[in-house]
Image 1 (cartoon, rainbow, N blue to C red):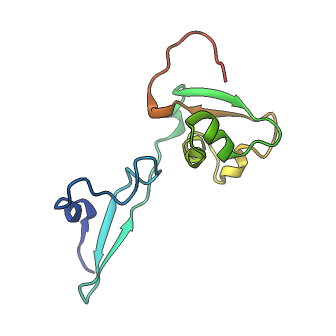
Image 2: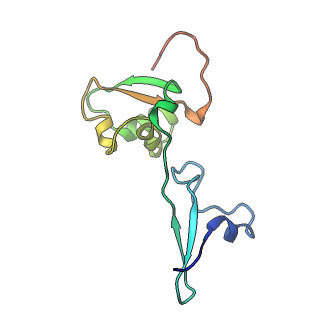
Image 3: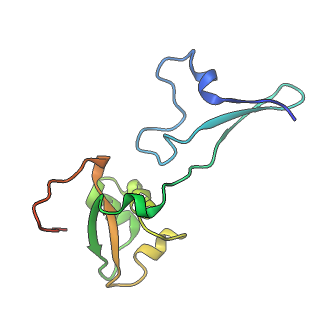
Length: 126
């Protein structure tokens, strides 16, 4: 089997190069390079592992799902970008992001934008 080296080594020579934008869920995922027997390099994104949900509890706010809501609409509402729905999905125990909003009345966790701790004012405005 060919050796696998971290993708970052290949990008070290290119200042500021990164395959994913900062807003992508894959931005912090490790990228690898697999060299095939003929020397061809194949770049791939390694698995993006999430911390256990218990470690992230309390780092956000609750949201009660209303009829007609979708993950992309929540991404727009809380992060100003519909493509950020994945942050809400990561904070909840779902395999399919549609499970977040499939039932009105469900209470889901919404992480803080940018991961900044919120001031504890005693209220949970949504």
